[in-house]
Length: 363
Image (cartoon, rainbow, N blue to C red; front, side):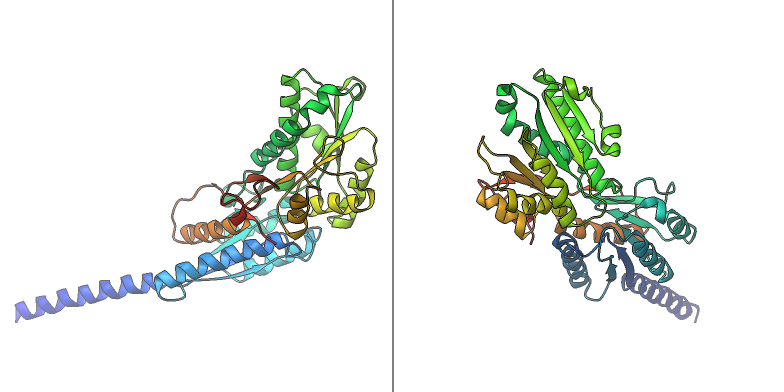
């Protein structure tokens, strides 16, 4: 009798443990993802990455292990709209939240509320800089500062001989859609800092003028405008639209001493291209203004292929979406996570169709 009872207890424990393991394995995780917007194909590509990785994980699990809801304002200028969306995400009580913040200061109270509720946050793309300590556990994004240096290296190599041959200061424009988001500011500052470094190594002085944020936060030894060999002029529109970026780009392209211009994201780069449709001054020849951009999309790819834009840096937005889902799942499981750099590459008409570049381009 005792033997039978003992065997029964052992079997009951095994069944109980198996049931517990199965229940744990069969858990469905719910994630809320708040992006900076849906107005560009870039964010649609991030969404595709989230969808692809979710499908892969669910297929491997054999059931709906992950479900997510991704939202974003119509415009990257709609800070108040994003704040409301984050509040709704918080109220949904998800297992974790993904966030690409338009303005961290506007979101800080709600981020603190998420932290108090024990809801972990994973940043993506621009991330969540200066958030309350410990609230954001990791970020999935391109290292935007490093990506800005990649643009500077490739552009400087292209225009170096023109700087050397110039008998008067030359101008390089930088068009940034804003001066608030981490991705844009880091990218713009990375470009400026690397350009100053490269020019200084060749004995040239660089002045930085225009937007106060970029002038003030850029590093390196900056010269007075009157003493400079190269003037980097940074322009930021009042709102984040292609049309207003085109207006700012047009001011730079109309300067007689401009030899190059950089549009630091899809909106800004398309603004440069739009401005050039009227002025027709950009191209890949030494007698033209050398335009470079950032991101991909139909308009930028066409301009690079045609040679109107010399080149651009592409991120991997699909990869950002995939890594975001992986990080959200890991943090929801209580695993340690860390920032993940999803990389970038510079492409021109010569390599746009290569195996290295083509998979990272999006429309």
